[in-house]
Image 1 (tube, rainbow, N blue to C red):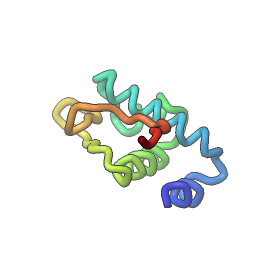
Image 2: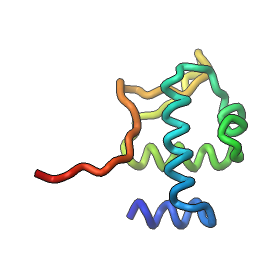
Image 3: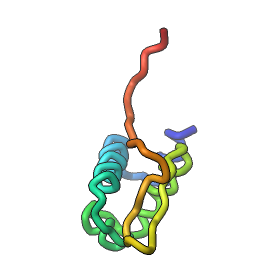
Image 4: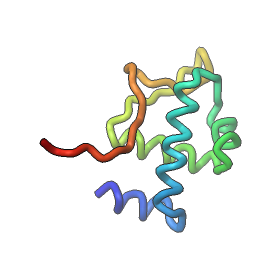
Length: 90
């Protein structure tokens, strides 16, 4: 289902590019720097519209992201980070 969403939303981008951008977004959020949606887009070398698509994707995966108008930055509502990895079953 996630792969289908990525393919429909971000084509013709390679799926590895999508993962790379998601990881960059996570690092930027964790950096605690102020980024407006436009500044976020410029930092990621994507359009502002794509920023919103990526944030929507992350939210659909359960990532608690919000934009704080007071500080002018994206934050995680809970402590943590976005990790894409293989988890072996026991």
